[in-house]
Length: 138
Image (tube, rainbow, N blue to C red; front, side, top):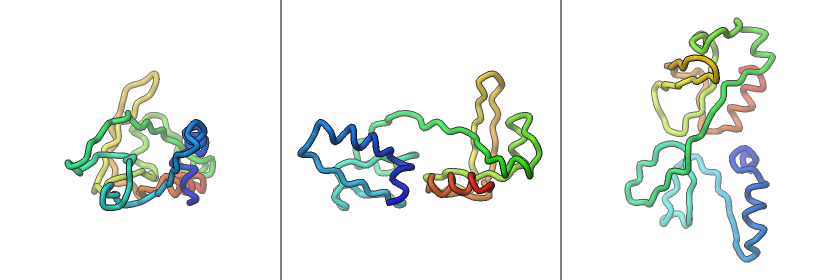
């Protein structure tokens, strides 16, 4: 499972297993939604909104994101001076659920927030794929 490192850091699994020598863990990185009872899972961690009303859900917290670009990309596109400049740039977007368009709120530590509405030229529910595309200059 090459994507395991990108979704669950191995150190987290190791720290969990260490004090519980009799616990067995199987990590299934699925692109679809697992139905816990039917598929034999005890727990599922999901990114995004859950639509299964028959399950007990607990919100673990927000998933902060950052805007990044490779040096190769930045050499070929105009400099960014404000968050609204992103509208003219290529964007790869993480989409755990299918949506036609996305609204992304961009917050800066010392400046105003901006809302970016985009369809995203490249969208995926695979963080590893998006990371690799960004590194390649997409």
